[in-house]
Length: 118
Image 1 (tube, rainbow, N blue to C red):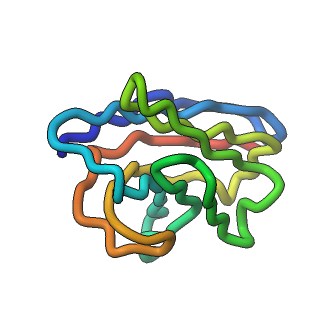
Image 2: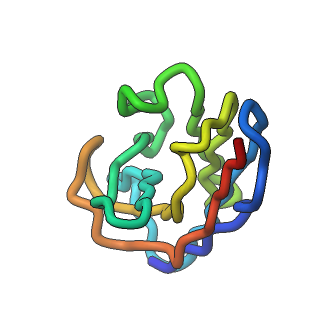
């Protein structure tokens, strides 16, 4: 499975961004898709995940109510709408594919930078 993330950029605090991830290769109906982020000097953090049929989602407390994950299996894409962005959301964001709401995640995209200015 190959993953290509896009949509990062610079935004002011309170603004919104939408990240997208295109998947190719051997996807599976068992796959969960997820978004992680890693800020400088911090560990990679699982933000949100979604099951194959979209019926099961997980959100970390840090993004609950602000970020929304969705997927379109016909287009092999997963997206994350990020609203009410804060400077502490600044990080490199990664999409990933794996099994289970909290992992393991074994396929990773290349990362896209999100910078939120105050």
